[in-house]
Image (tube, rainbow, N blue to C red):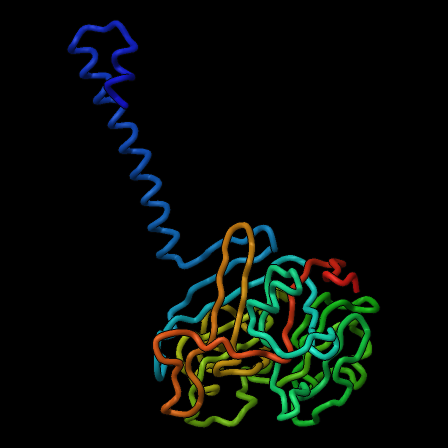
Length: 299
């Protein structure tokens, strides 16, 4: 390529040699700057996702990983989004699906697992989308709510501690997901501190009111994760634990990044998914949508 470029100019031999050297030097500088920027971006572990008003952080949680990788994946939203839950029965789907299939069906940029469910595949606790109750029964022991779409003046999306909220808080939001509180505003652990370790999914709110989705690639205990979140630079004020183990799943499909995570570590000490991912079907998920965006069915 360089030979053809040089031949196009009528220059003395020495000048041609100098021209090639300058071109190569400039290309080398440009390549070095590109490599340096990529290296620094990797070192910081931050991927900007402007298409959804979010950023993805890869943080070091090796100090709390009991088994498997010590990576903690954090998806932090800065823009106005809604967290809309879906259950396979409410959508007339024939059966539960793994996270990739859910994301394709719902045509959502971000989808993650909802809370726990019983043997009948019914969600444990409140589940409401666009004012419609998908699971209308409150679970009294679960004190956490992820709410969005306020029906009156309020924060657009919150992680709510039911011990410190209005008694009818669920009626003030169009979208509600109930699960277990993990950390409260006083940095208190709100679940039992046991030795059971698994891959985890947590939804949290920071001091600036931003919602964060937190997933651990390895197996951690809830107590260790709560303490890690409280002491991390994420500035968490409330966190709610969702389902864990093979049910801990995330799909991100944006112009900037495509990522799918499946939990590979359950609470049983012998459990691991082997060499690959267990694509466990989920009865209920939460899709993240910009304000006012409808799903594929136009709900």
